Image (tube, rainbow, N blue to C red; front, side, top):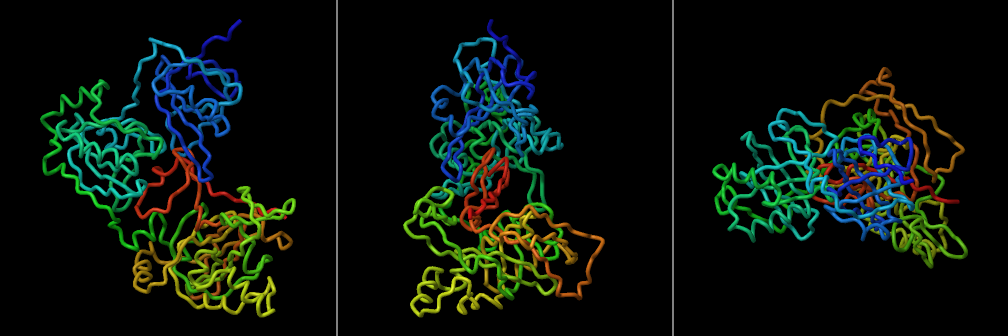
Length: 527
């Protein structure tokens, strides 16, 4: 006897043998920093309930040709997991994970509508009647394009414009990457269409912060842009009702001026999506944070790995010898390992000291020589000792730098992902410090016997009741070192509308545009 059809609203993690009749509302592909593709889709049933589903990388080749946007299916057998995305495409408590036994059968179902939108009105957005962690469908007419920046790297393109609906209220919108390019191309090729009414599916609403106003934006691959599609009833109706209120594409308010270069200053680029914090502010952090601070490099910290590690010839990961071959964790094979800098430097801002981990790229900039060249020079003189710190490294010390770094609480360390030595820029960064410094003690439980090259689960505890005087400049935060494999100057994280790699960009991108879930990978170095 066949299993009965069940509704999306009934799905929970009590079993895997769910059988549902659904239509695919939204389907997109996500490629990770390791070039692994997975699929994400949003399904809805005849009761118009929605749920998100994931097709893992190893199953993409099996299901990619079977799944099609807008088609209806009978699907059964899933792994059911909590809907734990940082930014959720649906408000269902669970998500479906395709597995090897998942069955997908295309059928024609008249009782499930072809389109289903979870619309939120602009008036509701302005009144704050939305969830900050939930993505919405938003429809509106474009009243003004205030900024357009279309550059060769599509991920850095953006268009800023105003959107309105029948409420006659306006909200600012920002499209990034491919959607910005899509809107720009539509503008340049469809001026005869008059005004623009667009639909953003799976868009993120960002609350106002500081000088940044309330804003609607895309969540990268997870957002779909539809422009003037009159086959969608909601778009057709709004375009008709707003026809006297929207400017035409040829009007002055709709002139899109584009540029092929970035208009952001070096300072804007350097502090992009980072908290500008003093050392004292950093001492209070308890979550992973990208920050910019100011410090003087004082001395090298001696770990157990010397001043360099053996790296892969194709990436920055460390290598180990296996079956006579040097292999990294990405399974690249190297004939010989490549020495790469990893230097732990104690730095001070005059009140607190903190350990910074400088990686190969930034070390080369500061020293003016690669680790490979330095090693070869020492070997030629017969002076090479892998645990002896060459005197040439000292050129790094006593330098005052503005440092961009990632704070990771489970390591109580600052992993450097960039620096600036320019005095004018450093002064401007100092002016951005949020408030007067408040020093504190951080108590770290340290295991003296651990391998310094392995990830530690030790978490710092901030004791706010034990505040130390500002007059004591010798307070030292003694963080643990981090694995040599993790080089954030090369691969900062992994993020998507679910998980995707963050590109090095010059824009003030919103974190949700890049990802629904941000993950920093801790890779242990095998002995």
